[in-house]
Length: 391
Image (cartoon, rainbow, N blue to C red; front, side, top):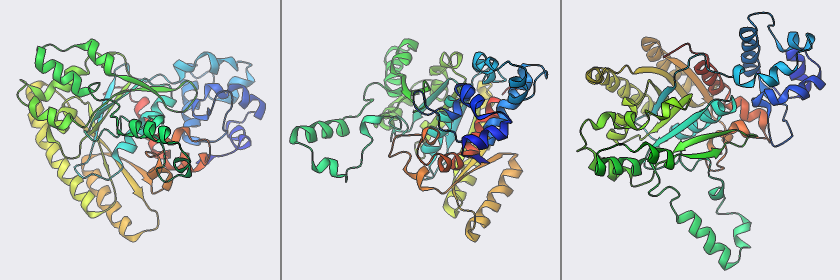
């Protein structure tokens, strides 16, 4: 349920609107801009807060209302880190995949990462796709519409400058490929180099950031030459070893086609989440990757790894479509057999345009209710990950 006014949120929490203004900084999901708050949120996030209050106070207080009535309003502001702390101290690494492109996988990973960051989690996104769309998702300087009138009004120098920005690959020689090449040349993993190529980006909410280990288009060719590296399957796992000590979550965006990219990503992960759409071709790819994962389980035994299939994120769903109802049922039957969690992302223009705008939906100020409605179940997924007791 989406609560889209200050009054509705205050009523849901059973507090006054003035109190809501005071404690808004402790509810990151509400924050938009520097000293302003867009009073729109999901009841799932507020339920999460209520349960955390009960846990942190050993049951002495069970809600925002009970804290306010006890004159302990500052509890929320003073305990933000504790409120949003993961139940497990271990970093959770998840690879996202589908063998078919065009299922909104990258947009899903970016938005899930941004939601986790909004909930005060330390997040690292790893781009293992040579199309490097995840790497540039949060890059504001290339967010533009080539058909806008602004370009028509630019001077020649301004157009030259814009062309330079667009044609320049932002992470050339400053990507995951840089680390792989260095390892291939020197036979030693340079963790300082890993730290150097990781970049911090703003997700569009006040003081909320996440980190990205970027990709570049040469990654595909670079991976082909990397096949000669001994035990190359666990190379990404080695690269992320020190990072796992610093982050709460590592989300890996895999290539839909490069098998070594997929293999490296899967071997580096604790969980695998599949992103798909409710149609025949996407379902076939979904079924194929599940079969491949069964084979993978046998392969990883020699490295004493435990990789679990975790969830299905079904994007571009439409509620009143008989065709989609059929394919949703097919997915549900398949996921029941594998005991998978399933999360739905509805077909919305906002979600489709999120990547071109270089802006995750969690940070939308305009159309905020629609944006939060669109990613509501991704929010549920994020909250379930934070609440997990362990891997």
